[in-house]
Image 1 (cartoon, rainbow, N blue to C red):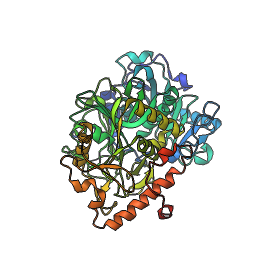
Image 2 (spheres, one colour; image 1 turned 90 degrees about the horizontal axis):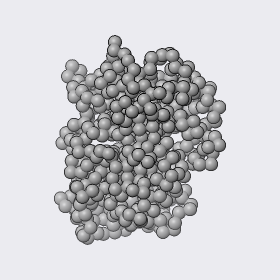
Image 3 (cartoon, rainbow, N blue to C red; image 1 turned 60 degrees about the horizontal axis):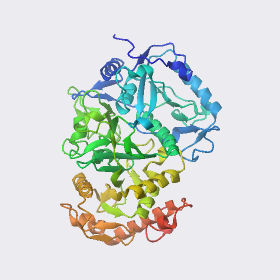
Image 4 (cartoon, one colour; image 1 turned 120 degrees about the vertical axis):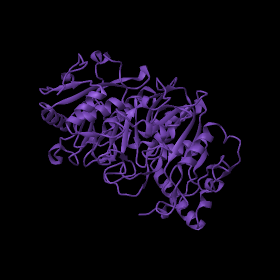
Length: 540
């Protein structure tokens, strides 16, 4: 078996107090990591060359198993609550010792990588993984320093991913065998009891959401692309709303698919790769993503056919949340470096399971702040542990509440200031249902959503007539190229208009009820929501 160290760092594992006695593989290239993963039976190669893996029992994020250490450095800065659950430092230290002991004589895979394409806002992240394919995932998702540069990189943050180490809830003070714990003072993250690699990515995103806004840089859960005229577009949205799909446009250059910062001189990608949902993937609808699934890419929980190893992208027998991780440069015409100017258009993507929001609408500045704070969408099956098969209506502040360690008002205030300063146009695009709610209506066709996005970015919706939705107050265009006019008015797509009205009032009431928690909001922003409050219609 071929084993050697490649570009080990002068800063050893003792920088985080880890006394490791096993074999450590430093900064291996994708080919060697794939060799180890296949040899260790962590995955198999598909017929296109991608590494196909299984994440075990956890096939999505585990938000209820995430903790933040509460200490003097975080006590008065972190927004504590259901998302940011505190853990005592002593609990963390004890679990850290047990994880170190577990890994002490095992093979580990170490990657020293960058997060932040802008040099002024860049951090070095070290990922220490028990699994070779987790190391490959990290290498392909984060930014890869030049060959040989890792030897002199001192890690700013360290992630330790012990996938097979199971916590004892009674002893460790956690809720299950799975744990994702951020110690921001130690700059150390512990992950265990889960093979889902997305926890590595999102834990670092949470770190960026803590550090950058305190430096007056807005961190965003959005994708971004660049037009021929250097115009930048941002796409906000939770998993399953279309960020990755809609930003991968052959007519525009991809900046990034999920996480970005907005500083004084424009936007920049946090990552060096993409993490796409691939359930139902087809060459016709998503040719760029399909073409990226080659040697070096990682496929999570995708079913492959026996003998041929062909990927069965329509097979959801393992999970609906099948995923692909691949480097940004696997997308043709991606930006390098992945930075851009200030955005001209900002799109809020929502997957409306009620089927009542229009597929496209233009927002006023006050409506933009209202919908950013609301973050309405539907959680898609499989993206989180414990979800059923049907989408669940939810409100996720700033379209990324699970990853926001600071008070949401900090992110909202920064976005409002930047929209005003750079005169960005803001749009709401519904990629969910029409003609009825989930189970009755149909998902809006991707080709129509793409046509609406292209109309927005080409300014074709600037001069068309608009109508104001009487309930939600949204400006809805009367025409949008080849998109059927009836589709633009969701009420007209329902067989029973009164049933539409009932569902619309129900969703409006949900908006109003959710917004009650924002007590220190500008009255004009609060008034930009639905035009009446009917809390009695909200289901118990």
